[in-house]
Length: 377
Ligand SMILES: Cc1ncc(COP(=O)(O)O)c(C=O)c1O
Image 1: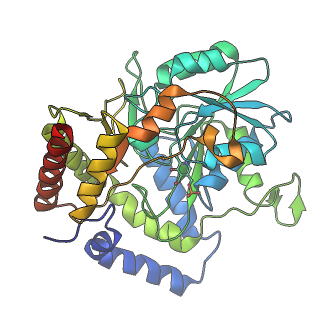
Image 2: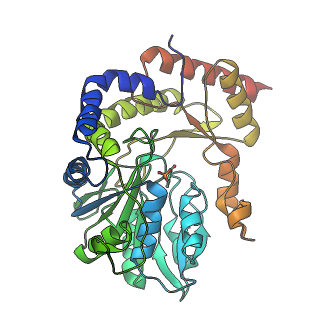
Image 3: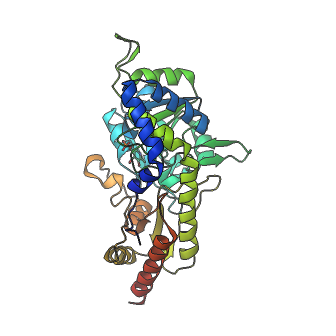
C-alpha cells in the first residue's frame, strides 16, 4: 500500500506533470512574471467557473480578507461577526484593520455559522457578517443573507476551503461559494482544493465599484502607475502561480468528484458506528470536502482513535484544537460551549484527490477497530 498522507501533492503533480511543466516553461520564457497575461486569463477563467462578475487575484487568502475588509471603508471599531470555530486568518485581519471580531457559535453538526447566534450578536456597531464555508460546504447563506439585508449589513464570505461549492436557494437560484455576499475571498494555499505551488488568493465581487476599489487596494492604491489615490498594499497573484492554477482549474471538477468519492466511502463506513457522527450536510449546499471531519462521542474516544490511527501510520488532524476566542492573540472572556466542546471531539481524516481503495479500506478498518476497543474499555 502507498503511504497514507493528509494530502498527496506529489502524486497529483506527477499526474498533471505535462500540463503544469509546460505552463511553467511558458511563463519562464515569456518573463512576464508580474501582472502578466496568465494572471488575467486565470482571473477570467475563475470568473467563468464560479459565475462571479469580478475576480481579482492577490497574494494569499489572508490578504484577500484584508482587502475585503479595507474595501468596505468601515468606521474604526466596527464589529464583524464571525465564527470562533475556524482558522485564525479572519480574526487576525479584523483586528489588524482596527475592527472588532465578535465571535459566534457554529451549528455543531454542519460546523458553519449558526444564524440564531448571529442574530443575537448584532449590535448598533455591527457592520459585517463574515461566515466561513468551513471544511468545504457553504454556511446557511439563505438565512445569513436574509439577516444581512434586514439589518443592512455587509457580508464577506471566506471560501478558502469551499471553492466550487454550490448553494441552491429556496427559489431555485444556484450560486457558488464566494459569490453570494458583497465580497468573497479564497486561498490557493497548496493543500487547498484549488492549490498553487506557493501562495495565492483571490477576491470575488459582483459590484463594479467594489471591484475597482479592491484592484486599487491590491496595487498600492493605483489605477494609473505612480498615481496613488488611496492607501493600498502590494498583494499580487504572480504569473507562475496563475499559470499552474489555470491547469488545476481545468481539473477542479474531477478533484471535487474524487474527494466526494472518498467522503461517500467514509460516510458509508461510519454512519452506523456507535460513538462517532459523520459530518452533516448543510441544506442547500453541495460539499467539496476540503476536510472530512468526524465528531466523536467524547474527547477520550477522539484522542484514543487519533493515537491508534497514528500507530498504524495513518495521519489525522484536529481542525481546530483551540477556539479563536481562547487564543492569546484574540482572547475574549466569553463562553462558547458548543465551540469549546467541538474542539475536543472533532478529527479530520485523510482526504485528497489521489487516494485509492486500499488506503480508504485500511483507514476504515483501523478506525472501526480502534473505536470498538475504546468503547469496550
Ligand atoms: C478558512 C480559511 N481562511 C483563510 C485562510 C488563509 O489563507 P492563506 O493561507 O492563503 O493566507 C485559510 C488557509 O488556511 C483558511 O482555511
